[in-house]
Length: 385
Image (cartoon, rainbow, N blue to C red; front, top):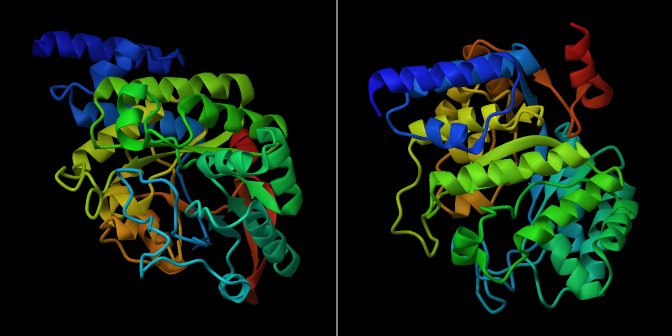
């Protein structure tokens, strides 16, 4: 395509964006063309980002809990899972789980992100009771727990419906769902990565059901492996379609693939420019998902910081005890302090605001950092500005 044609096509897309018209599959594919300026895409994504979320950079204070790395599945992209007899396999005890809760409370965490392996010798009750244990002892901490893949496994274990499992887990203490397990929806790719675990219709049905019972969820896309631009745009459009129906997605997180220690270790990880292009295109395509997160654990601090000008308005949080992506070769720190997070947001020219899991402003006791409560929804605040 000639430079003049590229400029004309970009003007058409810009006109759509400024008129708040929805971008098409062909628009998304065009934006992935290597000859299309990433600066032009970033500028447009930043326009949408500021229209939707102002000049804010959100973060939270959170910790991760990966209760076991033993997993019945053998996904080609995963460096975290272990076999039952592997010397590095583990399953946490109640005491270890309680200690993680005490540490989270002592450090002012508002959220515990709970995901892990599907341990075929652990019954459904082990997973459920873990939430009850945490909620009874640390009631203020929000438990963002269990991807759709785990919910699908729990359905298999219990022989109940998705709705039954989700309602039972909600009663045990689950507050919301992370977006993991989506990978890439298109079967051409998904069957190459994880042919035996929860398929695309199941992932979508589980999140739809969660939304129907009032549970907010996140959504993701794992990119930079064997997929093509078409598969990414198809994935985004399927998310957008479900969001049109339910409105239950809070935030979209593009996840950059880390090939080290996986069965796809011959691949190169995505470049920083691909990361930024994907974040920007995601912001432009997902016109009905309010927030886009630049997950610094996977992107690296510098790229995540830059992403705040390419469509992202959130960089996740302090992220204590993250194992899954570090096992896959992530070179980022295992923890960032609140001061470090606020500084990198300010360096990007944004105003740092702490939010809780469901995007309410967190209000801290000025005399005791560990004491806090949730205020008004940040989305309501922005709407009133």
